[in-house]
Length: 152
Image (tube, rainbow, N blue to C red; front, side):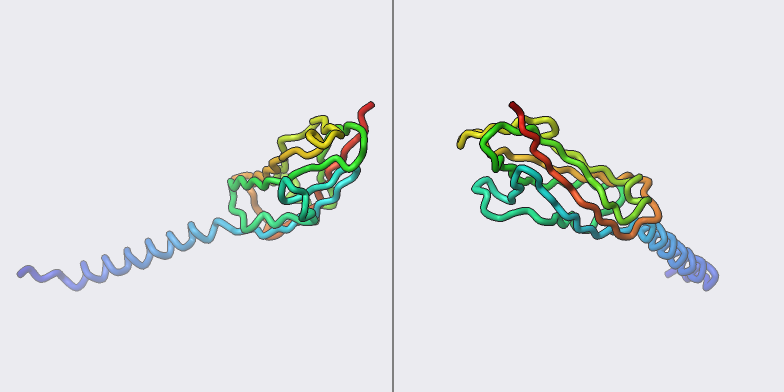
């Protein structure tokens, strides 16, 4: 049996500790960002299911890491008796840096929602994207406004 010199054992141990510290440092560079956004609807209702039973009043995007893309499905219902064109905006960002690194989009911008029973509800997917270069943001919140503008 070959004996390993004490210096070699010590060098291997120190290398392991250094590599572990580096790996921990790399993992610490990624940060989870909790958020809950408020949802306001104007002229339309926003619901969690197609039966339009439970209103969406806030969205919890969960814990987000750089580069994250998270989608939530909601249902938009025309509460009026005339067709409405859909629009979504965001405002009241509580963190200016977050606004620069986080984007919200959806699948129904400019969509005309009918007023008849068969055309008054539509599925919409909201997608939140976090830049992979995000920095300086540990939490954020903002308001989402979904508006239906009457179409003659």
